[in-house]
Length: 197
Image (cartoon, rainbow, N blue to C red; front, side, top):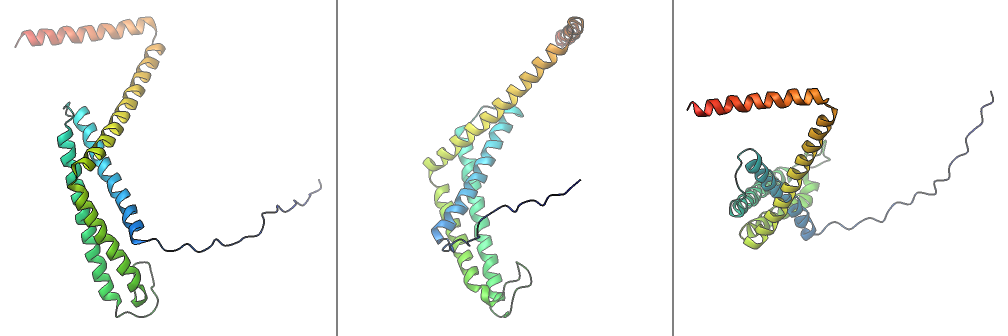
């Protein structure tokens, strides 16, 4: 057998991309806000699902709005705590020359970067507090969360229904009749128990 050398593929010449300008403070805050609001919506969505499925409780838009408000406020507190932690890191880094040995080893050369992160965390906290007081904004968040919750519940019910029909189709007629008889026995026992109360 004779081996043939593969021809090299021409992948072109690598050209490094132009350096991107650093994100603006507004961009950093907007990105943080997207993440925070997504987390708050997920909290509301999960609560709607739990109330419906576990507690068999009706959907209450006012309760969902208050939950969203509390979640945004909690995230604002987290952002403020993050800003304070970064301030402490910055204060320690001011007296530390040299290069960092790992990503959390801040040095004097990192002060500008830390100041930017502190400013972004503080601005994010302020935006979250403002949004937590805006009922129209909260209602919009809650409506998206409610819609996502019902889409998940609907998909789950559709899957269970499909599984039930698949099982029904696999059962033979005598097996189906036997199982229906067992359900009938259970219903009779429940009725007898209920009459005995």
